[in-house]
Length: 114
Ligand code: 5GP
Ligand code: ZN
Image (cartoon, rainbow, N blue to C red):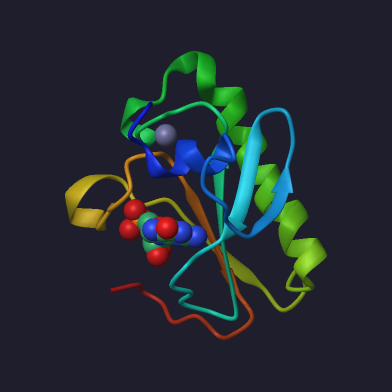
């Protein structure tokens, strides 16, 4: 997607604070962190959101979750705890339409979310 900001991060057209990448996944720090650890984990391919994911992408979605767990380990928040959030469409407040898991941790997170 030519005009997608997160695709530009993946393609390294725009610099960002990368924390992890592999063949299928890419992760970077959120520009407006809501917790001491706030990392976005995205697929390298453009998928608008969970609603647009295809059955063929189910393994990719699982891999992205594993990447969240791996980064949480590296960030030292595995035992203290963390939350993975996937906002989808308007009511969830999705603002960037390239699927991204938010990995949040490093402080106590209240429940339910707003
Ligand atoms: P959403 O609201 O779609 O679930 O989350 C989009 C996230 O992308 C927000 O947390 C926002 O702070 C983050 N974001 C938006 N623009 C940029 C940017 O240019 N760089 C980085 N690192 N994060 C961004
Ligand atoms: Zn994209």
